[in-house]
Length: 124
Image 1: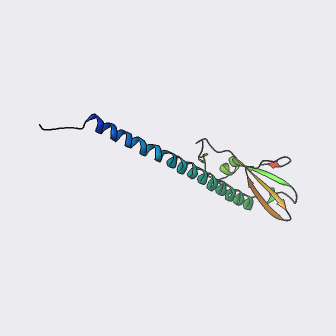
Image 2 (image 1 turned 90 degrees about the vertical axis):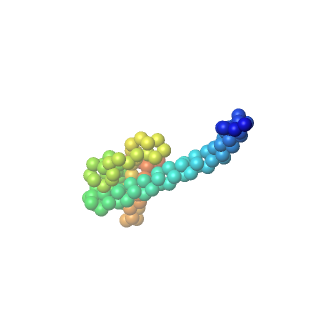
């Protein structure tokens, strides 16, 4: 008798093995994706900070005095050509909308992307 094909038991064994492989691999893949999104988010924040520094170089008259702060919006950086027009949040894929706080302390500029406190700052 010539046997063609697989038995039901053989097919079930293959399906169970594939299920086990998927069960083991899925959390690892999910973790790698999450880590890469966080890394991209950090990279974007560094890029936005660099854009704000470039903006500050071109707009020295708008920079704050000692002890004061200003807020530069991402939309300002985009409209003046200092930032990419298509920056999206890697976690939600929504357009990114962050602010950059520039503070002058002891004649040094401090840049803070998406600050928690921006009370009393001038907005650009």
